[in-house]
Length: 402
Image (tube, rainbow, N blue to C red):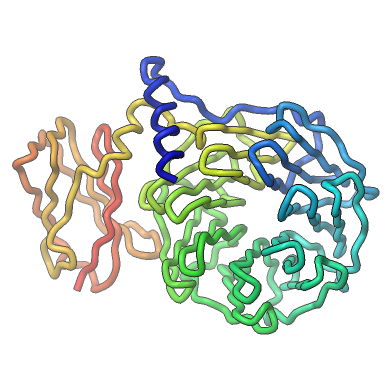
């Protein structure tokens, strides 16, 4: 991972003099159908699916996308490959297509449901799960030769599902629904998300650390296996449809005209420019650098450097120059900085639901020897996030009021 980060930073420094950075570039998909799902097994081999039964395949990182025969005109909502040969597609009316030869042939599987299936994920070539409308969850332990209908105990659409291992999995959906199973899907328990927004996608990198995104720019994070979910602030109100983390720190979310990325576990989300204002429905990274996002009207965007940054000023976002102390605090916190800030500073404090509860603005020049005192006595006890903005810096610090 350190090697990848060095390559990424090297890319930024090589382009520094141009006042711009390599970003997301469009690829030619040769279809106008809306693409709803994308899956890559390497930085070369990938698949995209969408409306009217479209299946697209690339063997060269998306330089060329060719069509495969699905045998259906139904909407294909998601695709997942566990390796270059074994893949599964889910879609309308319980449709499941499976391949064991890299998409040369797709065969129908019996899903035992007529509900629209929205998302699919496999832990290995045998063990998989799919979710969809009206709370449907189905599981397989034999590569899809047989699918078992499970009881999710909810009736909302479950738009995202992910397996951590063969026992533990999470599903997310409308009305802020987050479900967890620890017994391969036989029983599902509902977790407290602290939101009623529609949740669309979930990504876990280990049994403890996971992220969920949804409508209204919602981003939630857990570091304890879902026992507690905290809302993250990202400055976006666009609907987010998909999220993919490659490590516990590095992840990308996409939505309506929006791609945002974090390299610090969601403390800061960086907006990445794209030449598209429509919906992007899915995102997939083969590693920390190579990623694809798909959406309306056949759009496919590609990056080979993690999406780059939005400009030179964003380099400052990567620097943690502010410190808050004491932390935890009772009534007063102090803000210190390790360098001079010449323009005004704003300190926005959010609760763990993402609601702004306090704003402090300092318009004078700020030296590294100065301290800023902030009164937090009116805040109730709990966890807060201080978003500190200056002309060339955006930093978020977790704070506890007791």
